[in-house]
Image (cartoon, rainbow, N blue to C red; front, side):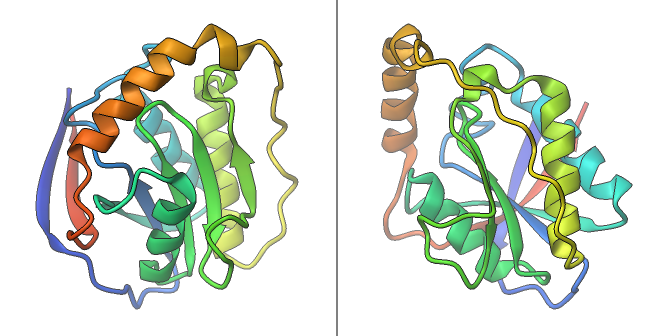
Length: 181
């Protein structure tokens, strides 16, 4: 079981080996499973394992002031000691971002969350860490299915409303202590 404890307002990191894992407002509290019903705990474990396998460290933050993945990632990258962030919405949509990019630019984007397999999250974590080390990894191969948006439209909309209901435009990003059962 995923346990999340809020620690306080996030401050910029100073460790060049630090990657930020930034999550959306309802992540792990209001929503506990991705759009394909994969527990968010399992997804985070894979991301963390990939980052650790590359010799980097991670810190979790929750961004409350936006549900937009580009904004979440941009804020996270500016707080990361390495300048690199992997950000995720509760439904599983994920992006790797670098601090000197505008919010809608990214290093890698994984927009069709229903097509992301669990093992892909580990590879995403590894690539995030490689970017943090200044490497230029091969991008993670993404799948595309033009029917995915229509298949998941209702569930995606409901998840988005839940995220929006937990957003607070006046809150700064919060450091999290994440415990896996």
